[in-house]
Length: 394
Length: 154
Image 1: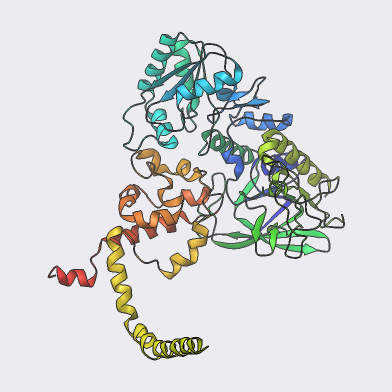
Image 2: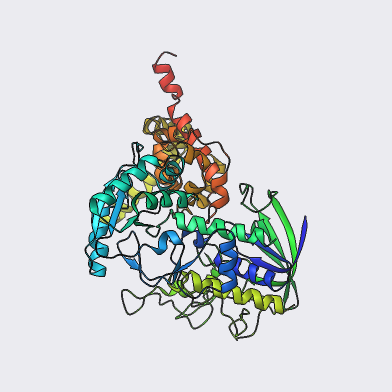
């Protein structure tokens, strides 16, 4: 099998999807190669950084609306996370005096009384706590997906229980765990809002994170809507002409079956030829940076990988490793490992020379970028810019 | 000095004895000893891995506990008490699952082998292979060894 695209995007997380949509918006024919969900699907629902306006419009068109948020959002670790934007179900997860924190009995990792104390102490507010029943929990307790699927199918008892708790507490705002439905959460949320008149919000998610899952599904839907083909598979070897990448050999693993919005992949491999390539493969979780016996590698295109505090490329002949920082709480230098780029976003080697003239690097695979610190909005902006540059480079 | 020479000589004699007698004997009895070992550990749910299990074991250890497999699993949404109850018991660390194959195999019953879990795994853990391995190990561990079968008069 052969495929062809003007702009080929490797990676289908937030940066890759933004790059693909941006190149498409610039009038290019675009294809995406995606090995699977990466760390984008593990995010908790809070967006940090400015989101390119056309991207939020593309996401809103498939039902993923971003609301501006002015205050930190409640995260089930007990912290309040800064956020610039969030989907409506999380945008209301801000704490005020009298906000009710409502847990579900049998659901671990969301202990309402403890969270009410932690969030309340952080924000200097008095919060209320309650725990409601969502029906017969399995013997070992609820898991996030089983509870979400149950609530989606049969929300009535839960809606009544939350409504009663809200009335008893006389609360104007209630924060629930992010389990109101896998994708049908809006129905459950508005049912509670109608029954109580209070603002109903889901706290941010921790893995397995439904907010991240919903975003991942929305990205695939937005790509499909834009007519962008998503190939399921992992970029393997590279077809190189001089200092240009003219094609990618994609390996399709045997047990990869279907990815939403993509065709049924045939195990084996196929080649996609392209005029320009966006590299948005993520860092360690997405497989964009791998560690093997030769050190850190970027497996998709073989770009040189840099690590902070190393005088040269991290490999067997590198300078002695100093992987611990002065401060105990300093970020680990490996989190900044990645591909260095020139001012146009093209990958460079040790001497600063451009490795591939038609490759543009976006998202967490870049050196010095820690995606979890930088935030979804900034990753999206980086992808959007790379997609635009790739479209213009042809 | 004499004591040292005596010690070295003693070591040499023991070593020669080991080489001539114990090592060949061990090789001859190897199969039987393995059988005896397995008979001991099988009641705890351990069963030997097959070569293809071993080949994929490194991939199987790639789990980062993100839980995306549980979100993708249609059987889990249908049967909350099944696969979903302890989603990472067999994915989260195969080394933990190996002695619990008998306990968790019933939880795998709702699995339809749709492989949606493998399609969303960020680190490429061969989850369907792992599930099949747990099922096979539970089956092997529950089966009586030949010695047990003889003892039970079957």
